[in-house]
Length: 228
Image (tube, rainbow, N blue to C red; front, side):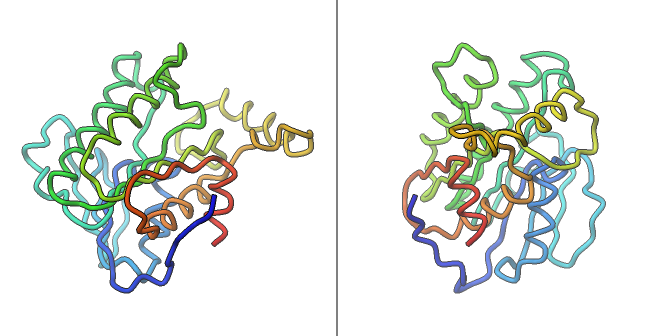
């Protein structure tokens, strides 16, 4: 993919994050707090990030009570890194509520509040027609997001995520360990894991592409985008 990105930033941006306590979101928050191109970081979270910074404005919220905090969803770009697993959520319905409904509802409210750009962490296998629950859910979210009135939509499809989580996911660790070896197998390099910090860097750089419409980044694009 050819990137039409101006990384200088002619004015400071206000960023919004949901999912800031997760694997990718925590790296994203740290990077944004250090980035001089962003003057304010608004975080909407179910539990405090535990961070303090003059740029940080933290809202500890209930996602089911948007009427209480939705008017604060204002700024230049919304970064959506919210997500969970069936094991942690307890059921497919509970996971769907977090991974699809909450993300879509926040995005719709932000678009209504005239936030112009949206960056979503999706999945490499996202496909609304998939028979796999997770892939179908992610693909359905992408389709729904594209119908919202953002000027710029950037969809990141990273594949297997690498990095230290606050929670234990033993099967994920096994998958990461196996996939790390794929870089040495011809034709399978595209399935290698990507560190959460790399995804976070790619998300930030993606928001500086002012091309109107939707751009979707594959794993190879993510590595390239993060290196700019």
